[in-house]
Every structure is written in C-alpha cells, then in structure tokens.
Amino acid sequence: MIKKIPVSVLKIGMYIHDLNVDWMDHPFLRKQFVVKTDEDLQKIIISGAHEVYIDTDRGLDYAHAPTVDEVNASIEAEMVLVATAPAPVIQVSSAEEMSRAKKIHKQAHLLVRSVMQDARMGKAIQMDDVEEVVEGITDSILRNSSALLGLSGIKDKDEYTFLHSVSVCTLMVTFTKSMNFPAELIRQAGIGGLLHDTGKTMVPNEILNKPGRLTEEEFEVMRSHPMEGFKILSQVDSIGDIPLEITLHHHERMDGSGYPHKLPGENITQLTQMASVVDVYDAITSDRCYHKGMPASEGLKKLWEWSKFHFNPTLVQAFMRTVGIYPVGSLVKLESGRLAVVLEQNEGNLLMPRVKAIFSTKANAYITPVEINLAKPMGLGGADKITGHESAEKWNIDVARFLIPPS
Image (cartoon, rainbow, N blue to C red; front, side, top):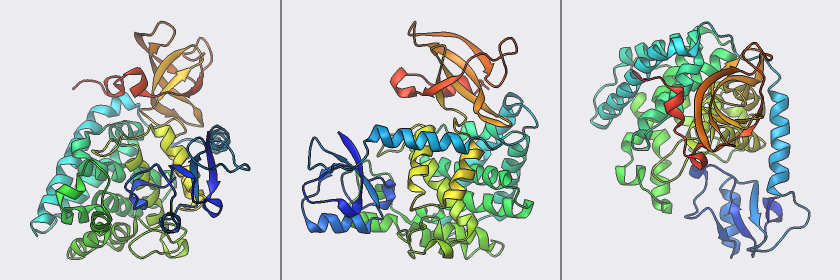
C-alpha cells in the first residue's frame, strides 16, 4: 500500500516510493529505494522533501498516514474549489488563431536555438530578435491563449531544451496577462521565460541529455546553469532586471531549499516565484530523454501538493485558473464513455471546457470527431460532462493529431 507521510516520521527500513519533489530537487540516483542509513535520512531532508510516499508492502509501515488514493481525492476536491473563478476572456477561437500560433511557435523555437548557439560561442545575444518573438507570442495570447498553450504541450524530447524555453515564455505571458499585469511587466516576464535556461549552454551535452540519473558531481554541474545564465545575460546591455532575476533564481523555493542561493520566499520576487511554478509545471509534463512526462492534470496536482512548502500557494491557485483544471491538450473521459481532447477553456467555467470527442471506450474504437461545448445544455452543443482525466499513452492516442490541424 502506498501512503504519504511527513519526513519527520521517516525511519530506516521504510521504502521510498516517491520523494515527492521535482527531479532536479533531489540527488538520489533512484526515485524508489529502501532507507538504509542515517545518511539517507539526512540526504532526503536536505533535498527539500517535506512529505514522501512510502510503499508499506516493501518496507516499514506508518499507521497514521493517508493512502495515495485518499491524498488524490483530497487534492482533486481542493482543485475543484479553485476552479470557480472566471477563465480568461477569449477574442477569437483557437481554430482561428492556430495557423498564426504555429508560425510564432516555430519562430520562437528557432530563435532560442540561435540564442543558445550564440551564447555557447561567446557571441552577443540579439535582443531585438528576442523582443520581436515575445511580442508575437503576447499578441497571439491576447487573441486566444489556447492555441499557443496547446502547441506548448507538444514537444519532441530531443528538442526539449529549446522548446521548454518557448513554453515557459508562453506560460509566463499567459500567467501575467491573466493577473492583469501592466504591458511592460508582461513583456519583461516573457523575455525572462524565453531566456531563463540560457546557462544550460555551459552544461556539457553528455550531462544535459544523459538518459539516466545524474551522479552527484553531474548534479552540481547541472545546478550551475542559473548562475551561468546570469553571467551570460549580464553582458547584454539592454537586458532588464526582471529577466536577470528570473534566470538566476527560477530554481529557488519558498522554504529556502532551492538553489543557487537558498533564498526564503520573502526574498524571491513575485515574477520569479511565478517563473518557478511555470518552469516546474512544463518540466514535469514534458517527455525528456530520462523520463516520461506526466499528463498536464497530474502536473497541476503535483504543483498544488508541492505548494505547501515549495511554491507560493496563492500563485499556484492563480496559475491553475490560468491554464484550467483541464488544460488545453488534456485527454478526458466524458460521462457518455467517450474520450475527448480539451480544445479551449470556457470563460467563467473552468470545469466545462470546449472539447473534441474522438474515441469510444465502449466500442474501443475511434469515432467521427465531434466538438462539444460542455458549458452549453443539450440541443445547443453540450449535453455531456467530464468524469475524469485519462492517459493518452494508455489508449495509444496521439493528442496532437486532433488538437492541431494540418498545415
């Protein structure tokens, strides 16, 4: 049985099922192992873990602890309460915006690749090009954020480093816009998102793309990238303080367990706190060479769970309202037994997005795709409801095929 316990009651002989922190926040070669020594206990504490999941079938039990099912039920109930706030206003449909969004996304991808190549070779970063891309992303999101957000959720794992930066930029612009930040702060946040991982150019490829867990020495090299990025961007005359701050401190955590400076929450700027939420969300929901990304809905649950210690809970709630409880690109199961891809959030009701039904679980077969606005009653394009999230991998469904129209 899998249970969740506070680290304070963790003992030698217990079996760690999940350290309950992001991959980059712990130094262990394996995610699952028996706690054998006091040194293991200290390493877990130092990693920033406050609560862990144990497997009582493979190690010692702790009687007064909730099961993983009980924890998930509680988290999902809390998330539903958050979903009562209005969703962002939409100016055009995601279908209308998609063709423009695809061009902008490709342009941003090529730019990040160029910026990182220039940084590796010691060449100056062309801020005019960066600002042009951020402006294009911002304009697209102002028209309809669903198009670019949908594209951001689809990545080639071999291009992860570049596409992650594009996604963080897209999410930061969407996040700050949803919180009604001034235009200049939105622009600066977007630049920070696009450039935040520039320091990874200084990390050797054999470490950056290693398919397995890193050694402690490799781990330290990887953790050097915020400082390396700060050094590179500090040489750019026209760079603002906000992108520099985001680059240097996007791995800091509210409890002071982050890096490089172990800053407590009150010393981390709000925009950098937002960037840390966005960065982790995109990282844990993306396929990488060393792990399979979790569904967007599961990523939100993890953020909510970790916000107790690592993130600003108020900002995590705001982020959840920004992307929706059922983010664009999610695969969901409907009460009718159909599986559907989430296309767009509905203004005023995050629990009832617009979806495209594509598969029948009863017939175990694809169906003629049909778009459904779940916020509308029967006869007006609605008459179904979401009963839960589903795994695209489990059903062998290529979500991108239904989310993004062919060129």
